Length: 112
Length: 113
Image (cartoon, rainbow over all chains, first blue to last red; front, side):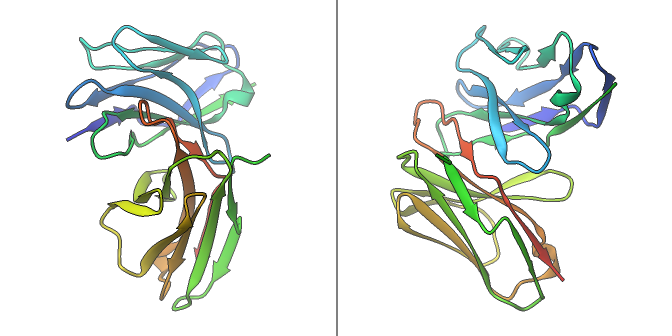
């Protein structure tokens, strides 16, 4: 079956630090990959996505590259801000089962 | 112009009661979902409807019953509430069958005392 593994949090960084949140997946077929972000007290919202190998998704300074050879979709940002503090979810969709498979989420805390 | 809305935002009730949570989307999407998020932020899918038909029913106690009066609405009714039902419940919808990008509601925090 499909599964997504994310690094455990919380991840605590100082403002302007470099961020990496690791995500690896197991899937049948060729999945679409997503990063969702959940700000405190809110629902999840799509941050970025990639639908095929070597695609790079990007949004709000965040980037992630679909690496088929390593089955990974790591999230990166060059300089985090306090406003980036949130829970980040990696997810995949393969077309079967009509549902997204989510990772367990990684909480990011950015301090001044 | 809210895309996916849920009511109520907060729900506090006692064990044994019956309660409902409502969800509406104005995106014209065909598929809607209910998720449960526990205190550790783990997100678990519960149900999915496509054009008012149930397509996903994960292992959920039968005290939980979804109802979709039309494709823009998906409500969740919970009978005989238990302490373990305390969580945040999220509604979501999707209309993109090629990539399944989902749009989430703001959540309903259910507290059972």
